[in-house]
Amino acid sequence: MKEEQMILFARALSRCNLSEKDQEVLTAVAMTLSGHPDVFRACYIAFMNDEPSYHYHPMIGAPLEFFYEKELVRIRRLQEEVTLPRSVFIQYASYVDLCLSRIYPLGTVVELDRELLPKELVESFESEQMDFFVVLSGRRVDLDNGHYMDYIGHGYPFGLRFDTSPLFLSNLLIKRVVSEGYSDTVDEHYCQEALRKDYLDAGLISSVYAEEEVNED
Image 1 (spheres, rainbow, N blue to C red):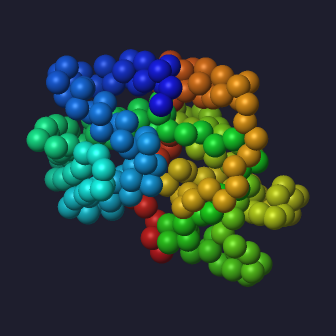
Image 2: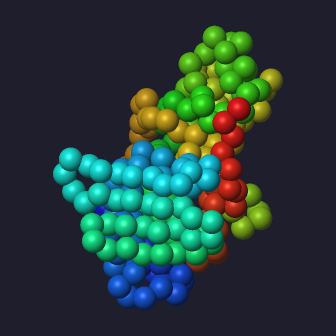
Image 3: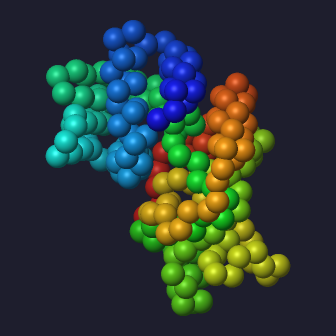
């Protein structure tokens, strides 16, 4: 995790009006979640689907436990526990995502999780006898409503076609990275300054955190 990302996250977290102790615990939790995107994804899907809890018990490292109650979320790490109102947990998760999550390079090919896709999209992929692969062509696209869409992509291997619309994708729909696109220091600087820092300053968050249900048709 780069230092500038942690500094940005600390600035974002201060907006949640938490005690210094709670901020310390939540920062440690955020570092685990950002380092294990599959855990972050599963944790938030469980929350959106109103499951009672989510538990992460690694062989090495501190376990994390999330308890989703009606209006509260309890987060436990080792012997420390933080209780957040539901709205503050959503705000916290949006900052972990905005400041600390990996932003995949353009040209990255990802596999979508068919279990979370709308039925019509699943049928579209299957009718073309396609794997659920998408090549990413846009990142953190401003929707002009205070939110951004994580990615825009096109079905692989076809790419951009005039007879098909682009796919608007949230991080939650990405099951795994198949092949990562090219990135360099220029791209990394752009991601940090434009897609993280400028978005935080503008108050933009992912559209994921404006929704509270995951499609499982």
